[in-house]
Amino acid sequence: MAIQSPQSEAYSSELSSQAEQIAFFRERIVRASLTCILLVCAIALFAGYKEVAAGFGLGAAASLAGFWLSVRQSMSLLVTQNPKRSAAQAFKGFLPRYVLYGAALFAAASWPVLSFPAAVVGVLLSNLMLVLYQPLLSRLPGSSG
Image (cartoon, rainbow, N blue to C red; front, side, top):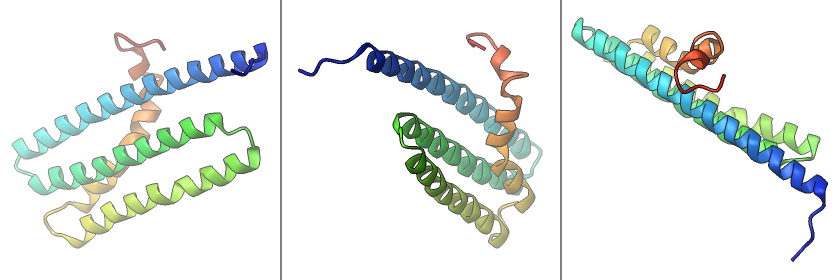
């Protein structure tokens, strides 16, 4: 059994605290995004715009998946102590997300049953949720700020 120094215990405790904050943040953004997706799609379907609902749903699904990948990557970057390795990891993490967004937009542009403008708005959903987090979402009940 290795003896840990107080510095490594403090670092481990700090990492644990940061991981908890990121997990809480991720949960809040995902819940708010899912609520928005359901509302927009329900309203679009009720109004008879099934192409808009499908396009927005596809774009929003890509947005949520990209957000999930981004948060997962940030969790792994927390434990990487080498700055050069962190930068390379961060750069490498962009590619899958942007391929995902591109695939969703390509599908929306190619298939007439999907609304391309609605897909673009859907892809931007997680960015919108991030912008709204501090002024709105962090003030909801059960939030730590």
